[in-house]
Amino acid sequence: MRLILAVALSYAIDGLILTGFAAAGVISFEIPLLYTLAGLSTTLGFALLRMWALKQGFGDGEFALSQVIVASALLLSFAAATPPPQERYWRGPVLHDHPCFTGNSPAGRTA
Image (cartoon, rainbow, N blue to C red):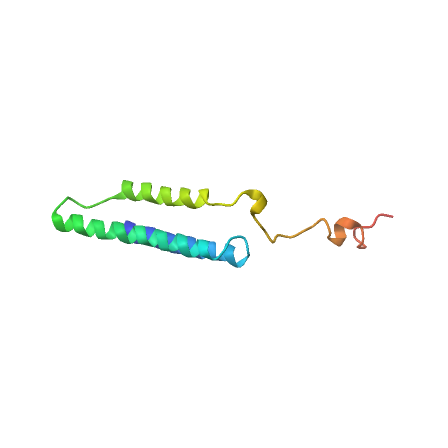
């Protein structure tokens, strides 16, 4: 059960990181919400499956490999949904208009 809780915590942390990207305007706010809900839903599904397997007496009820496959498919599906580079938008610094690069500052001027 600790593995399932660790996976759930990982999805929650990933959701927070993606929310930071959404706050910066890199991605839409739907992406962190959908990713976190999908991840936690699959984790809940595996927790219920594990409890059912233990109740039925099917050994220890570990589904680590299955959970890795589902998690990989989830990550690949969100990676495949990434827009092409020309449609992405990043509000990063624009240095080509900075005074140090245009020669308009005392530090950028040459004698």
